Length: 102
Image (cartoon, rainbow, N blue to C red; front, side, top):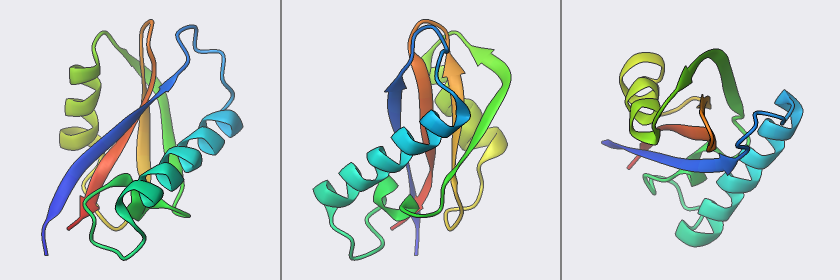
């Protein structure tokens, strides 16, 4: 079985959301992916993260969504069976992403 990197953006240009709010919105994004791709497993989408949660990383702020995705996919996330990760992009919000089983 393979994996696919998937992500969503949680709008929060001023970084005002609390960790609890980020977790809630991430779970909503996972549920939306589940509605779009089904809950049959191995969709390669964030639907696979329903119920697993999100690790929030506030220690580094990124300038672009691309940089944020590269950091998540290459540095902090390596387990397609585990939770997603969230990092902040200046002026945009939170990129929530991770490797997902296909």
